[in-house]
Image (tube, rainbow, N blue to C red; front, side, top):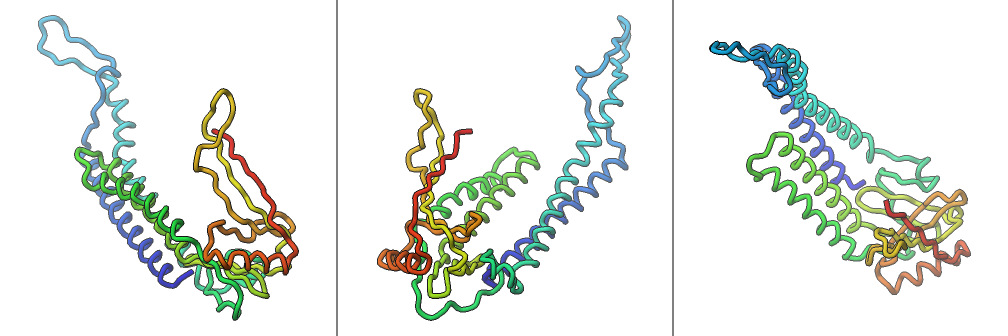
Length: 293
């Protein structure tokens, strides 16, 4: 993991934990003040048993069940907001601990088994073939991040919004922008390197080294979701099919995958010639259909 990304995630998680903790404390203190004042909660007259006064009496109607119904509903109304903010603060603290725990040191077992590692990667071997992802795979997540920006703007500028609705709009917008931003950064820094020792996939988030003796299968995986029906038949939605090259071990565990649009194109053929030379494998087509839910 890039040190800049790790520092940014730590600062972001710390800021989110402090902000949500401060809001949680404010909500708890406000709820305690409401309970100390003994402010009654409103009850719906239609849910209560109404005792009508006698004709000609000036006595107001009485609702005997109002206090019984108002007590639990008032308790939930007072404490659901502090409980939500407290849970959010705990999640932010857990995220902060998780970011601290990764990316700091080496993981020799993960590296030896070809698993993903967040430790600083060593420099690649001299020579070899280097591929990178195309610009289209960087622009697509940035385009979809506009949905998160729209949700964030609704939470900030939306009129007549309840606190819960405003908070969830803000959280959903920030989370969506963060996820799509990390995906765009990952695609922008993605590199696949092949040399005499094996394959290496690296990005801003992490890296993995795959030895040639671990690679036992190479497939062109085509994922086709079936999203609508026509005359009872399942058909793929136009433009939804995705393709990628997948390298697996003897147990079928995915070791490395990469897009079919890797660049530069003149080095892609040399890349697969080297794979065939080292492993004797040719890519075979594997079509995966996702049924319509």
